[in-house]
Length: 192
Image 1 (cartoon, one colour):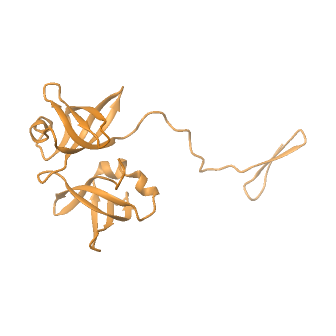
Image 2 (image 1 turned 90 degrees about the vertical axis):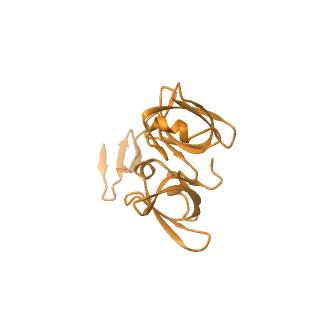
Image 3 (image 1 turned 45 degrees about the vertical axis):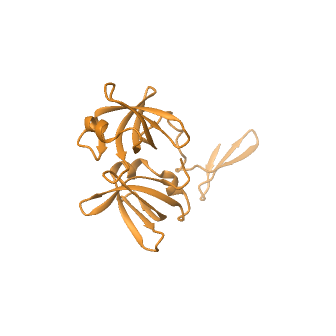
């Protein structure tokens, strides 16, 4: 027998046992296996394979990753993916946003971190507003800076910052676009 109380408790009486259950509309569905969206990896170009349309990137911990580059790969600081092999050379610092499909990593976006690519800024997060696509930082000199988040960053990057206390120190890689700063990637300082 089921009875509902005014406090949203279900009372289940069965075989002389009384059980209380609180239904929850906010219960989470089981996780879906696999990755949705894109992942990002920061490192240094270890080798380029122009003939195979691929680049190998070595992370700070020494692990090498191979990324396939397609004609749809966006490369900041280059006119197209083919130009990426001219502008992104061995030793270049990059952030690669990629998707996995059957164990193959395909670069969706390659951000070249250099004077002619993305710039770097460090600060303490004061606000992340993914709906408005904004990230606000307090810089070392006490000033504040609000950057626009690219579509990909607003959707996929830095979710650990959303859950952290408001005093997370981050490194932001950004470009100057239409008179403003647009964040293409950010991470906690010390996070790899």
